[in-house]
Image 1 (cartoon, rainbow, N blue to C red):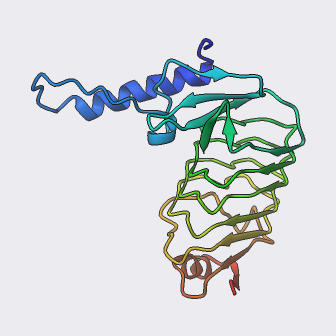
Image 2 (cartoon, rainbow, N blue to C red; image 1 turned 180 degrees about the vertical axis):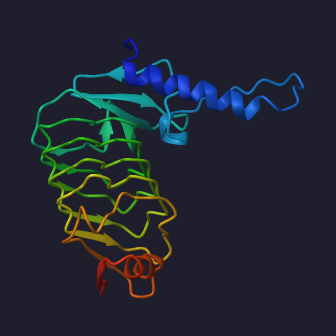
Length: 224
């Protein structure tokens, strides 16, 4: 266990404010909610323990016995994230886990990851390639923001939620493949025809994203 970093303290404060807002108007019947929420379950840190091991990964424990990677101390350019650490199954990339890591050029995520947290890869200015496993269902706010040389991303059909600014500042993005027919552009993902003039959105013809892309001036390609 180690002390909080500034980003963890900030996240913990946000969590406290969120929980206060959620419970402030509720009737107090004397019951105590002992649920331990983690960044893998609600997207913010609400835990006092961050673990390290002989690996270069830091992690927090989820209430179901799995873990979320919360930090990385290595310097690999090509990183294959393990599916287990210290015997625990990795199911999430936590908020800010790899933020501003300029060593990273390629990241390979394991099957079993279901969640990519807020700003997880934000400002990874050398990151050119990342795979998103077919088990992922949530990509949170600014997950890949300002990955300025990232040029090709495939979002599998398993993903049901992509939050705002997920690809903001990805000026080199040339192809974004959205495999789902249902996922919608509910928030501002940060896509811009001015910043990304070469961007082609590859998606199913009848998908919600295909309709959105055409309405907003993006070139589209049919996902066969």
